[in-house]
Image 1 (cartoon, one colour):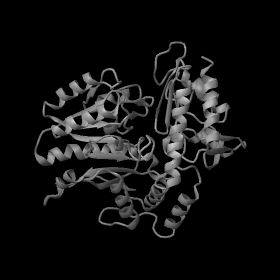
Image 2 (cartoon, rainbow, N blue to C red):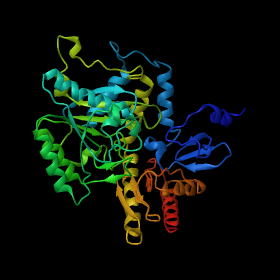
Image 3 (cartoon, helix red, strand yellow):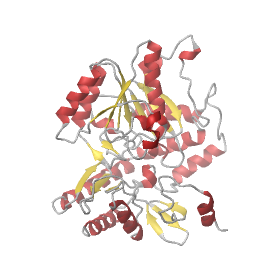
Image 4 (tube, rainbow, N blue to C red):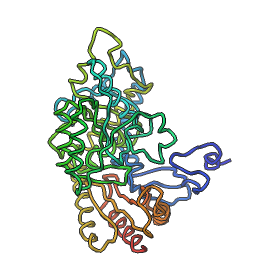
Length: 423
């Protein structure tokens, strides 16, 4: 039995209706923006392997960082023990976050980084002896697949079987540019009740909702109102972090600072799983107590894994190099030029934020959403063209590794235009 047959027999793939979807493409190796299949065909990794691969596959600096760390320390319990890679990574992360966010809690992925943030917010109020249990989120949100992160996400087909087990959340409407004043007013009314523990949001771009983008000034106002009423603001930068919106963090584009920032995906350049919850000093201080039970009694077996820390350090170093920053600017400018050129010609909605380009395909007047038939039509078309683009329903998006060449971007744009003209 070859390995692809073993996959069919033993593996349960994520976000997949196994009965109706075809066999997965067997990928054997990757280099730069390309993934190479067992049959020799190469595919461009247009969505950066679920938005994680910042610098391309098999990047020598990231591979070397992993190899070097393998010789020293692979893993160790992180309670009562520490190591150099974790300390150095925490310092680097604190330096790219706003002042005052100095404490870094390590976990395993984006969902758990949100879970940690939610638990910190709830326990903060518990430790203070104040009853604040309400959480506010934005309609359309996606924050992960564990129970806490599902609870603060959109209640939809993804989590409907689990909804009876989730805690209640207040949702404000997505600020779409036309209803922003009403959204701000409804948010103010909620926080003025004095029982809101936290406000959890994806800054400027809602990823899984279809790369929906909203105004910087509106987010600034929401955070400011929340903090006036001592509400803990949690920025989910799992997708938007590390240059995706054109700046190192999306919140670099606003004036207000959140109280917790959650990071994952591009954190390690896509090489190993890791999540971080970066926490304000004032929150951390509330957990300092003579009673052990008032500490944050949470952890994961692979918390602070040295290998993941080492490659994350190397990825951050690469991100801060002039060549990478220039690449981010080049991709952003290229996306913007494409959007400007075709905006009037497109019957489809097109928008750009940093290195993210998104198009909402209008096909047969079908409703927008994850189960829009454009999903499979677009996916299959792009795969035949050698492009791995996994649409979010009828929303097709491009967020490539930063090493992509301008000629490759042009090919992507031409293929997007060709496909869109079919409808």
